[in-house]
Image (tube, rainbow, N blue to C red; front, side):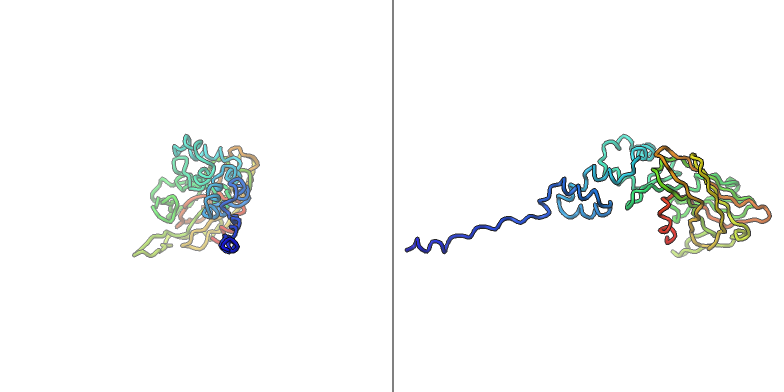
Length: 287
């Protein structure tokens, strides 16, 4: 009697376990991540352990790095004293370190990767530029300011002859680049926590345009000109474009002049020079 009802107490078979993202092989996850941009990879790394481990795979990040990233690391890490450690870093850490502003040439220049595109950007401080008359305090002065990434700018009170020259040699990855001067008419400061701009010495820039020139070691040349405008506002003035066709170091010379001696000009802050990938042009205009 009891045996005839034993089936009522028999446990039903357990359902098969469900497959989750945690069950995906790390190599499969990494194969998916290599097709995503760096920001998406970092976001998915927080999904679970499998994605976290796969997001650190060297082959994933090597595809995101510039093709000449080894030359870049030698150029920017060597002066920082990190070159010996560079060989011990995984590719993800190399990418992260290159995305920081890395100073070189005595702190007068900085290079970094754009986090989302891995394109190389570079800046040169006003202290790294050859400015005619900069040693004469009657015309020029160095001003400390937190409005510059280099924490100081060159301020012109007045001059007849204005000329700024610079040069940089760097292993730019192949591509198209644009060079900009970051300038402001007027001298900005803070009073009671509020930004103010003194335009007392601003004059002469609407009489004749400023001339910009660039040239490269590959024989490229570009010229442009424009009037300086909008006192109290930092503006990126585009000097010209150039193209890099190889991973060998490219030397870029650039200048900004206004040498018409029929009138004086003054009240100008020279912050720095930037070299950005040309496709960043629209983004920089909005900025």
